[in-house]
Length: 248
Image (cartoon, rainbow, N blue to C red; front, side, top):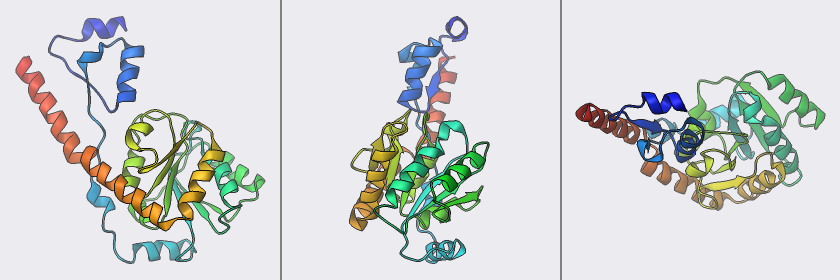
């Protein structure tokens, strides 16, 4: 904290990818609030819009899913902070209400084996699919109905932005910057850290209501286009560089 105060020059600028990160810089790095500008992460929404007409059908056929089968997707590395166990436990509860639902887990990492053991222990083999690292995440999103994120901590999660660009409603934990992205009861629902029960309730409601999924998904994409595009992010950083050089 002392080093940050000493090294931060009069014309230097500090950026944070979200308000949660800005608060962390103030509280743990000793940087004064007014020196920090929030520049949200942004993505290219065109990668996740208007997928090929047969993308949903093709990826479902590849995975052995029917055209009407409810599909929940999580894209995240297998790491303790991503807490896949909460998504898997939520899935166990979902199956009591929506019997043929499938949870797709895209990613790889150190806790994958542990997650696979939990799936077997809960009797979910066949209902939870481990896809590994996939190059076609936009197609996976096009083939899915709801996106889930069960992290214990986040900054500003890019995969949530991608899900919103793909017009997927979101069920996520209310941690880090997730609440800056997801508008509760408008683009999706937020639940407490590790709260697999409430997450399951939200998933069931969305999976049973096509119009609700459509409305949340459309509102999520509108929010993405308004606040979280790559173009907006680039423009903000360019202005900061220009202002810094001018001041210097």
